[in-house]
Length: 159
Image (cartoon, rainbow, N blue to C red; front, side, top):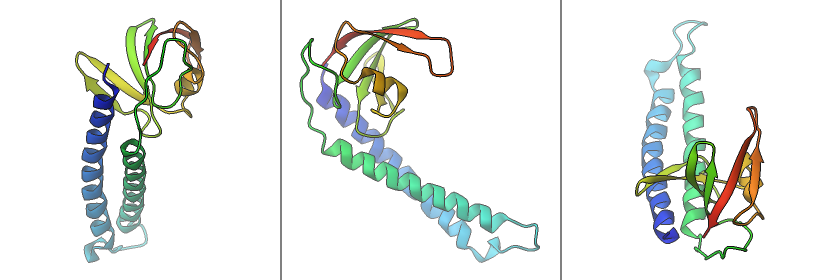
């Protein structure tokens, strides 16, 4: 498994998200400051809603910018079968629904990247899955039970 390629795919996805988010933030900012958005009466909240949307879009752009910087500076490293899982690890898991892959990233948790015939999901150390995977190694069994019936996952490989 080529982690450098996966990291480049994540960076490409983040660049696309940043481009789309920047466009959306500019459009929502323009809508919030447009003279046609002025309230026509005390119940008209178009301008207020547009400003909330513009603020949310701007925050999303800032988060994506930070995630892009974090992945751009991430140096892939190799993990052996007995090495503990740390940031930068690509982890293959086996659960009740079959095999799946997670990349322990510095940001952009929840991002899914198609990779061959599989999908790699970015998880961060602050996520329930990411926090359970940290410091484990290949062969370990972890249990997830966040708001649903418990799931047992076996760590198949770490690279």
